[in-house]
Length: 141
Image 1 (spheres, rainbow, N blue to C red):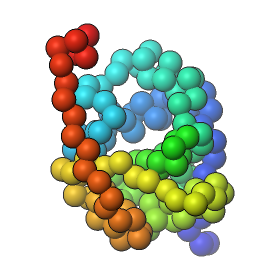
Image 2 (tube, rainbow, N blue to C red; image 1 turned 90 degrees about the vertical axis):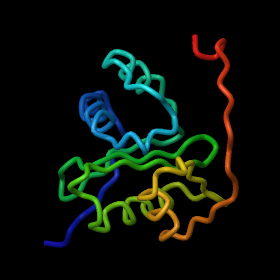
Image 3 (tube, rainbow, N blue to C red; image 1 turned 180 degrees about the vertical axis):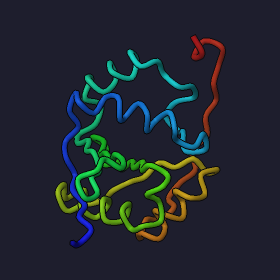
């Protein structure tokens, strides 16, 4: 049997899986949030359909991660740690791009996240900018 990768659209049956995936993500990978949301906040976020496309990555019919494409053509991917370095991420990346052709794709990565930088560089993505942030007391409310 060949190792099979499929991308299936996120459904309500994936809320708990996605929450667990988020909870187990390396803190260096977090660029979009600074603290773990509650389960209710997470469900509200998923239900808001924040991405143009959001899929569960299935490897031989087992949920192993998620991958999304934003409205600005940014790709984000997260796999359960035991499935890293097996080629699954690269195959899922190629599949999402094949299913959703664009002129260009982006990946916003924390500069501290060396594993993601290596992954996207290996997959032909190139560094185009560094972004800096200033948080004020008002923005922390």
